[in-house]
Length: 166
Image (cartoon, rainbow, N blue to C red; front, top):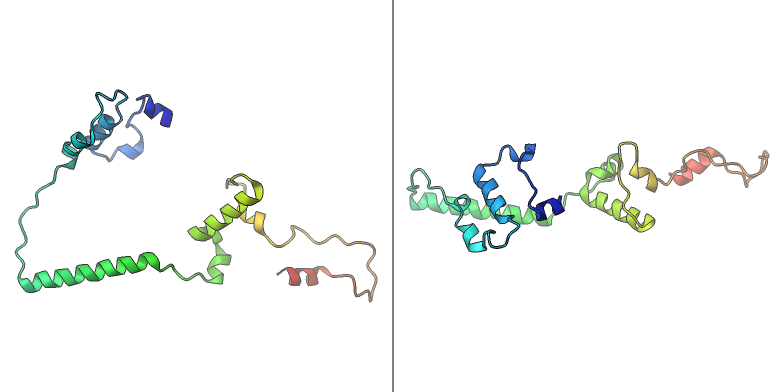
């Protein structure tokens, strides 16, 4: 796709472009011209009709008290936005066990571990379960080594093994 854009062979006919205005399409097509002489400069792009301001209907006539209240609400909203960026949601064990891939940081951690382990990205297809790569349980029961004798303390049952493994 990048090669097609560099060659100037692009179209705006996909469903993503159906709800975009013609001024946006015109601006993008002028910015992506192959010939540098025909391509818009930064100053010319800023003068494009897409960047024209629309004038509001009527100006607000607020009293000083109303202006103060608007300013207070604006500061409070900006503070909440700033705090919400730095505070992550608490991660509970139940949420992590239920669906670890629903949480972006955990998903990135799992994918980066898989990349370090395998040396390439592990793609998640419809039939592929990435979580199976990191399970701590064996896929089936443990194979027994030698015959099992009664009273032998060295032999481990399957239930005991599953208790140890979690």
